Image (cartoon, rainbow, N blue to C red; front, side):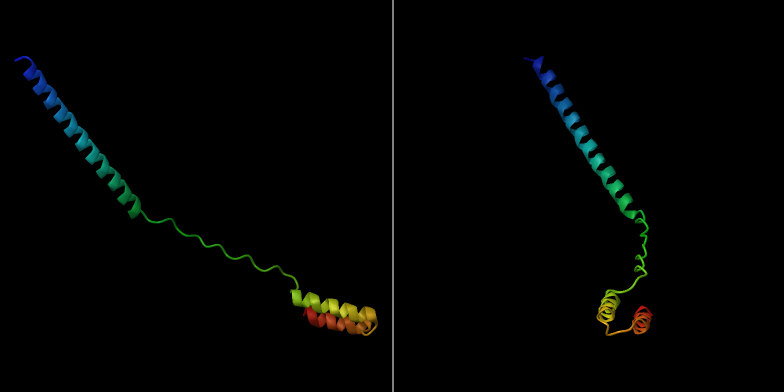
Length: 94
């Protein structure tokens, strides 16, 4: 019986040391993780780059297309002459 007590004490002491080492290691790991997060938060955010909107296509508007269709219809019906159609077309296209 006397032999078992010193072995049991050593086992308890070893368990206590191992447990303490694990707790300290865990705490150190948490501190380093927090430090890494703070460092990442303190770094300057990436520079925002603005992209210009694409210019509208150089063409005629839908309203102008509709007016040209009406003018062409009037020309086809014989209401407008070719000269009148060309003049109105020039006005619409600016």
